[in-house]
Length: 183
Image 1 (cartoon, rainbow, N blue to C red):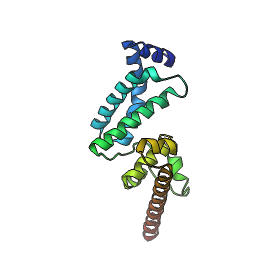
Image 2 (image 1 turned 135 degrees about the horizontal axis):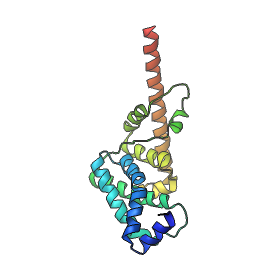
Image 3 (image 1 turned 180 degrees about the horizontal axis):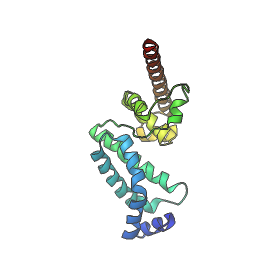
Image 4 (image 1 turned 90 degrees about the vertical axis):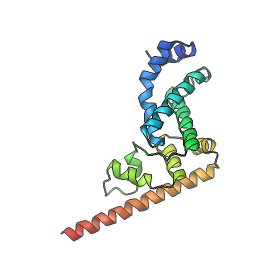
């Protein structure tokens, strides 16, 4: 079933269309949930809640903009509500390494290493970093979703990047020192 048929069918309340929506988009939405919530069980709950919210709100989707982006925004809102309700920290599972490696191209980090560094960021910086870098939200959207000023969103992102850059540089210096001591 193509995207337009799914949207039209869901608006008409067709179970077959909703099943097609779940089959086609649930894995991508689950990836969003995993990025925000620490464990898979809360992520699965958030995914289910997101799908229900999407189905309830599908009548408001006007067809302008990306349908997948619209669903991801709903999913992010559900995840943020879940974080506020139960105060879970989130852990990223996928990070655009190009964004991170722009700081220091001469060293290679594994995704796991980058995730550990991101996990060490203060919670608000991790959330803003994830929303901006991974999800592609702009600062106005972040400020609206987190109920903070746009300027605060920019500051949190800048601080997160600076802390990550410092951590990468510190880690690289440690590696170089170890390598020099081995030779």
